[in-house]
Length: 107
Length: 107
DNA sequence: AGGATCCATAACCAGGAAGTTATGGATAAA
DNA sequence: TTTATCCATAACTTCCTGGTTATGGATCCT
Image (cartoon, rainbow over all chains, first blue to last red; front, top):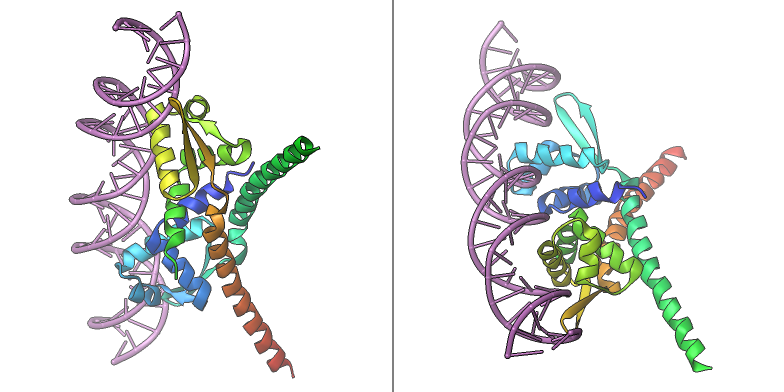
């Protein structure tokens, strides 16, 4: 299977980083400066988080003059959705099996 | 909003721990010994991971004699699903807005 | 009862990760 | 051409976490 969820989980595990990503999802494209203003950490810290998010494919960057605009990358969460639904399907299947068993015992 | 996804992301970020959880989802209830056998780490390490998973509400434990059986807790992933779909809805809404804008510009 | 097995906890260690300050390169403004 | 702003990178520090071994309590077997 794809080792894809791993990087996503690791990247989204940090609250500060996840907050940055959430804000990009909510409000769309933002500059580093704008993100720094509300993040509660220093500008270099924000830059590092953005680097991590970018490496995980969660954001895109666009350079414009001396500022860099970052935006959330929609499809990037798909592996996460796939993983959760797969886990869900696993225990669903096991519930079905249990159901079957009970039915067979019933007759 | 609920700070719920935080603990989930942090707990599932570790590959070893996530592997244990995946196995419990796939194969159902398992003893600590059985989980240790295939985890690649020591028994105390497995016990600690199971403790973390339990604290996050991802697993349940059931004591039977001298062994402890662990099983995945289905609904525990719901906050994760909620979070992802919320993020998805955010950029969906923004795409809709863009669509509207383009339509207005068109006429 | 005595020995073996299963698991959890304690104590400790090492690596990584998130934060900081310092700095420099590139672009905009004066 | 200076000067100021924006961002990224480097260097360093601190702390958390995942791993280990050692140990002990509880239960099962002989």
